[in-house]
Length: 449
View: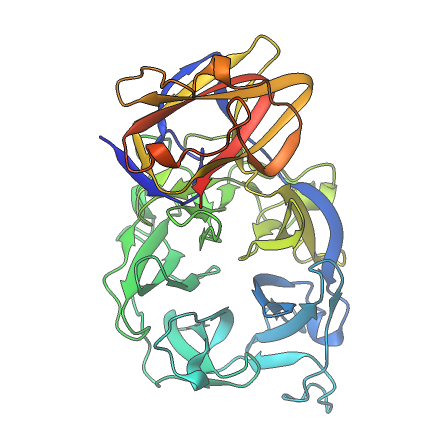
């Protein structure tokens, strides 16, 4: 089968593109912990549950909506707001919307009932009216229903209707809605449905998927599929379309291990980490990486149940750098949301060591006139590229011998053969790419105009 990639960026998050590997393997890369972005340091955050954040770029600023509570078990819950110019230093500007202990000098933008645990997003649906440019869901805790909310500015919220939009719970975790521009519809990922015996899908906590044309009327929620991989408790999902690769959905569930004993004296059993999953249709997910994407690490306060959640949002905060955010140390005075950094497109690479290796793609049809790679080599390493016909025969002028040894580190490096970059003569024809790597990582490629 020939894959039409046009000018879309291609990531190696799964084996979809790959026909053959020799001495090379796909490698999962973990984000690097950076500074605390938002700490539980306000009276209305005193329960030490600063979590369940939605984080987006909105024009020239970054915006974050997050859950907080003034005391453990309090009802209703709060949604607070923070913003940043760079995604690194965050402020909590007072909004003057809701009263807390006699004062409106706070950053609260939603106070519970009839819904709580908000999950907002900016609606890029071109048909969305201006007063619904921001949408959100909110959960009714007691009844376990989901309500729809809308806002013109992300601060002033209203119910889109009184009746719930989803009623088949449970929804007792961070449920994730967004506008899916690739399919022209809304999508939502929710907590796995409880079974008749009080268990979960397959005996574990799981994730469900549904879609809607208007954010009010939804298809039936169906469990996502992960092939033949072992079933594990997946708690939360943080599923998001990856903006630099139009055909990729990424998810970062919190993997819960209920029978392990955390820090002695902790109130509940279980520990958790973050795993990595990808999908090309939003329903079928690849779990070829069973190891953790993010470990609890050296912080002993992260080694207890539900102490590590990946928040929703991937920001591009510096050249070559993405920022992701994770809640740590829930229900402790050290509770916070931390920023993590990762190379742009750097979730998974095809890697070969000092001995070298190769990877060859399936037949592809592309548009454009130049080949761009996201790659990294050592000082002695290299990357070379050969373009073949659909049967695997090297094309004259585009063989490995025609390709000068390439070394260095680039996010969008343009490749050339004997000094020539132009590959437009091959556009629209089925070709294979053969990458020869030596002590190098290849993260992504695309053809561009």
